Amino acid sequence: MRIIARLDVKPPYVVKPVHYEGLRKIGKPKELALKYYRQGADEIIYIDIVSSLYQREILLDEIKEASEDIFVPFGVGGGVESIDDFSKLFHYGADKVIINTNAIKNTNIIDEASKIFGSQAVVVSIQAKKWDKNFECYTDCGRIPSGKDVIEWVNEIQDRGAGEIILSSIDCDGRQRGFELELIDKVINNSKVPIIVGSGAGNLEHILEVTKLKPDGIAIASMLHYDKTTITEIREYLIKNGVEL
Amino acid sequence: MKVGVLNYKIAGNIHSIKKALLTVGANIVEINSESDFKNIDKLIIPGVGSFSDAISEIELIREVLIENIKSKPTLGICLGMQILSKIGFEFGKTDGLGLINAEVKAIECDGSIPHMGFNSIEIVKNSPLFNGVDENSKFYFMHSYEVVNYTDILSLTTYSNHKFVSSIEKENIFGVQFHPEKSRKDGLKIFKNFLKL
Image 1 (cartoon, rainbow over the protein chains, first blue to last red):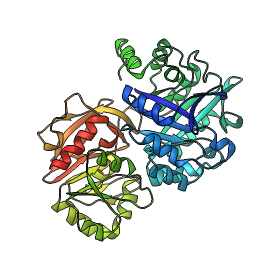
Image 2 (cartoon, rainbow over the protein chains, first blue to last red):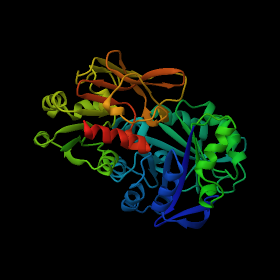
Image 3 (spheres, rainbow over the protein chains, first blue to last red):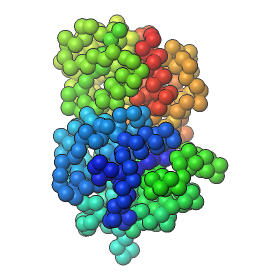
Image 4 (cartoon, rainbow over the protein chains, first blue to last red):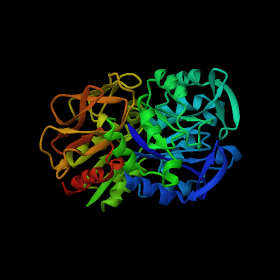
């Protein structure tokens, strides 16, 4: 199980939204990426959270700078619209490219990108919100409902060649009150590709709780940004509690 | 001493490999055409995309590439190791470079595919590539296909009860299924060892 540090970036700062609203500045992407790499993160995720929303270009130099001293996989997303964007991001230091909004708008991009770059480099991010008994996918930084059911979408993107899914919950994100376990359980049981779960970790028990559902990776943001814990401490705690990392 | 890094035109994500090589003090030449092979002493073949796409991308330089692999210390990484095989079965059946006696097949096991994340390796024979590499070291894997080979195995890795070949060595040719450029200090150590060959 991978422990992944997640940086939500509104260049030039890493920010932490609560429910995808109300941004707080945390620090510079390069410094935080290096800090979490040194703590032993298995991966770093960098999401430019405003490029898709404001339809502005992806800021490549910021990404290159942040990836410079990181020798673990660096996943980058936010505003990815075309095969050319994938290509550019790989040239600027991404090892995987994360796509959400534009995968929903133009689903074929998943097929094309996985054929050219390999499935392992194509990651689909899902922002889910509970609606009655089901979960719905949202786009544009958690603001716009897409009408797509999460489980149907999970099946579709796997068939199209996505190599990994990052699953976030709009209801739980940034609240630090625990993960959306019902959603996570459903998605993991419907998926062959690795699932990275995020949104909601507030203490070590929350993290231990979600490991029981056997995700392939856990993305942590707030707890690290506010120095409530370190990756080293999470790793030690999970090992002590019998989790295989 | 110059290390050539083979570039693929479309996919081209060799940035991480170049960065790791520079970190361990390598002098890099990016190989974009046949003439770039002239002054290199060693060769690194990254892996990007699918077996069939990679093979078609290198079609124009195939002969000179094979000649260079045979005559210089060479390290294939991930798909870069896989294409050294005789045949690949990703998006149909494709002839590989035929330099190692192996076939490339989809991983079959109960775990999630792609196999992604850090995993350990079980080194089965002594090799300068793994000099000073601790037996508990972990390396980053991200692949859906594996090399099936029985003669040149350097290490094995177990994923979800399935054992597969995680590195090979045949004379001057080395291949690793994992990504040294994404495997912290242990990965950089492999590049250092490769530079010393």
